[in-house]
Amino acid sequence: MIRTALPAEAAAVADLHARARATYYPDGVPQDGTDWLAAWRSAIERPDGHVLCLVQDGRIAAIASFRTAEGAPSDTVKLYQFHVEPDQWRSGLGSALHAACVEEWRADGKRAATLDVHVGNRRARAFYARLGWVADPAHPPAEDDHHLALRHPVTGE
Image (cartoon, rainbow, N blue to C red; front, top):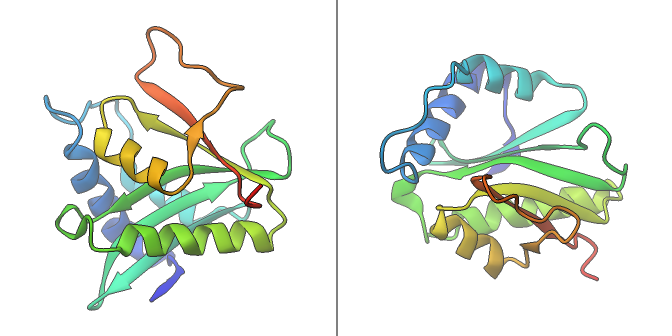
């Protein structure tokens, strides 16, 4: 089942986020002082944002957080976080959640979506490429940046 995450689920969402991120940082997840529990609680409660979760066997197995970024065109949505339980990769859960996101974006009149992916996260980059995400020509990578900007034509154009 795919549905909106609830504020009471912020800890479960933050835990999933931590497990997924740990897989693409070979030296461990950088400790930048971010309180991820508070960040996820805020994302879930934001009136201008949305956190979808895919629930399987009574637990959250995948999450997606998105909203219109400040200063971005109103017809463009930014996918801030997208995580699937690592032991569920290649099971179809990520594709199902992504399809639900695209469906919601279309219903909301969005024409494009953007995201930033960690350059070293080859698995995620391949996943996004299979789903139609391409390098965002408006945001070429900077030499010292560890992220790649991707764009998705929500309308199918």
